[in-house]
Length: 275
Image (cartoon, rainbow, N blue to C red; front, side):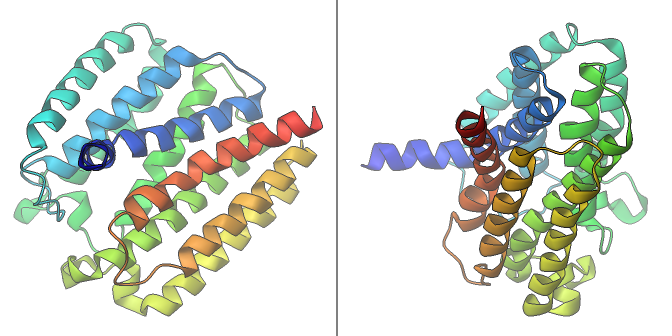
């Protein structure tokens, strides 16, 4: 049992779980574009996500609260190095235009952690913008970059999709902001710090409803997309309103981060049912 617990902790703390969540969102984009078998790009996204997230979480300049991981840090470092090496290798096989579109989001990730601004500040320490930076990076990496990779079109549906993805990720970040109230400095001016926990949940609910309603304005719409969007919006609301300041250790880092994976499985199940 202790071995299983150790494996699970490493799985979460090494960012494997969040990387799978990002890959799930990439695959959702591919499914909506009607393309499959893009496993090389999924692996590319998976490796890059682990490298990027561990860089942000465990770099010396990061002010996150992961200080109980000294025993597993060696393994996480080894995993991060290996993922970085294979990510660079696969980058040479990715089309040049895809890499160019990915570059701004990679730069934002670096600026999020590295203190390059005056007074040794990074983007994470700039008041009020933390989750919106994350939402922008995730939306770009899981919608814009995959669309470029498959030579998709930047049409009206693409615009709606990227807005929806941004809103979806921002809402998923709100439980983390509620959790981190006890860790975040007041200068961060996070949404729960500014308006309180209950109003944060109301704000998130408005974003979820907007995310849901935007589906109706798409030019191309299927029953599967309607049903999957309703279901994932409902799940997201349940996790948002179930968030408390004092929560179980893995409520956010496992369960909330599982929502994109749930979304992918919902779509796959609906495709089986209605195909």
